[in-house]
Length: 212
Image (cartoon, rainbow, N blue to C red; front, side, top):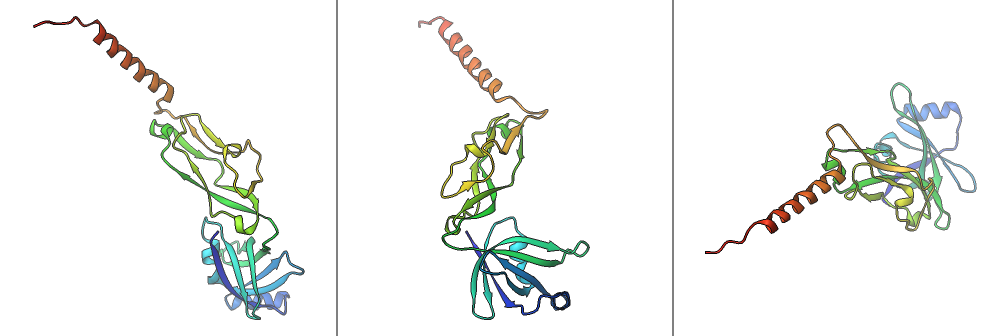
């Protein structure tokens, strides 16, 4: 999984007054959980743009001004209800030998047969939650939708499992191809083509032989 580096400064004071002063200076108060004790630090608001404003999942390398380097994932983020400015960010520390639960984006590839026939592709889950060791976290979960006909769907139980475990049930639908007014049923189309071929073959067999 791709990683983003955030350079932060460790916070000595965590009161409301110091937090307000940080925000006024363009800094975002942050807390890192998961270790022996919470780590309070701050970082420039611009440092979070590649982490927050993207559909992709990333791990984070936190470089603190005291020389400490910590690996983490984004756990929670709070925005101002009016300005949408980042108010607070929570991280969870990663350890090489401990599994972590994370939402991973789903990447659909291919051209569905059902969609070509007028069906509508519906994405029920754009992200799936998995559990894995940090080294085994994928950038995304890829699904080839090429074979999907109208009425077909892909559920979690249909997906191959690698070095991670899905936390949703096997019946959780990821995507489906639904019918529409302009849709042509795949089965009817195939049956029609087969019937036409059979008719052509019959006509050829019944035609009289000619002699010159």
